[in-house]
Length: 97
Image (cartoon, rainbow, N blue to C red; front, top):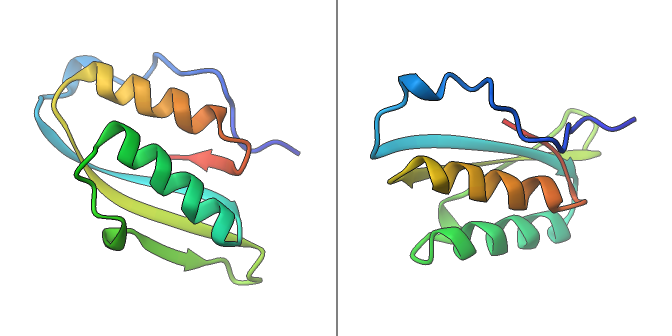
């Protein structure tokens, strides 16, 4: 079962967003270091000064999945679309919120 719709949604109420904005991003994938490494690589690609130590990792109740949360500062809408496109392309990420 695929939890992540890999087609970018345009129903994000973008007209309500005000930039720059701080935005918490939450990602869910199979537990393991591979997920953390892949997520950090994507975040650093889009935010070169991103501090990898600032992410929060929470295991699921069963330990099968990890939830990764990061606080990001977006300067423009194009950044939002670019990072979500890269997150959607990562096979280790099941869900991005």
